[in-house]
Image 1 (cartoon, rainbow over the protein chains, first blue to last red):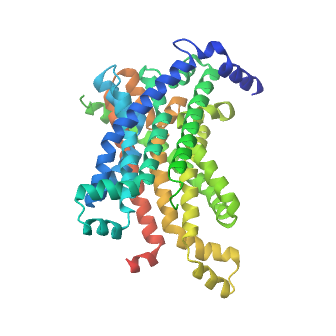
Image 2: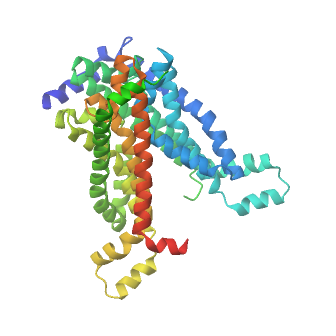
Image 3: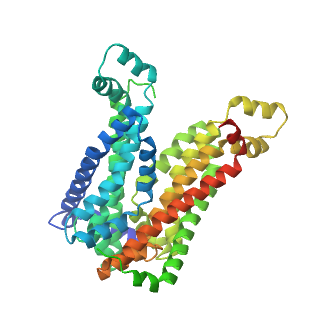
Length: 220
Length: 213
């Protein structure tokens, strides 16, 4: 056990391991690229959907069921399925990651919108604001903390799951996990796992810190 | 992408045993998750300073990717079912702990004071007043944890377990979609059935919520 941790430490800190095409720096960049792009696409789909459902109050049933469906969908199965259908392309990775991220974005956006005080919305309408003004100038700013929580949750889940890109022969930090498993090289597998976990934890702490700073004047 | 129905017909036994093994892993995780989070939630509810620490800790554990948890457990418990269950249990903790604490918080102070005034001992109050009243919120957590575990079991296929997840690696290696489709459909089915059963359990356990609604 001690030997293993010593080797792991050496693996993580050697300059040789960090450079080059299969180096940690490059794999980390790939990992972040998959994660950010997938979360961005998911936000482009999930945000309008959540805002619309929250603003009109219609389709809430669909949103809630979509969320539990998304939670039940096995990501590994989805990736393999899309891979077998589409062949060697980035589609399986992005479809699976987007499918994973959309539910948390939709449900949190919707939750944020429903938490807006109805009296405030009434007052806005009573002042003669149009529906889009109510939506963008009143509801959206008030719902923003919860919306950002949803985006953060989605990004963390995506970062954790982007490991799977390596399973269908792409890069990212998952490369070490799957190559290590194939080569029975436990140090490499653990190195990859530690790196993914570290990225997820650091991102989560940073983003929640930023969030707390941005909304420091609002009562919790 | 076509489904080879004859493969499914030939493999009903395998599909059944994988489904059972899948469900067993998920349910064990929720069971152990409850076993750990119930006492911790009571502590977090009673002792305020510990509350932030326990919830924060479970949040951090939750951000660790599932494949990473399984892999990090390999030197300790190896390629076994134990690794799968420990990994999944860690994931259930965040939902179960948070919901149980919130459930206990939602019990009205007056109800607890009434129990105290009637001479009910603290432990008895906890078991017969607080926990039953917290049950709807706790059950909401149990439902999320169960569905999540059922979906996550398949990740353990990378460490040689994973119940229905084995169908994914199998289909992937042979470039054969039928097992993959069967695996996805059975996983979703398991999740839906388990969720419906939990709703029924909650309905039976909380008769007082029905009269109000």
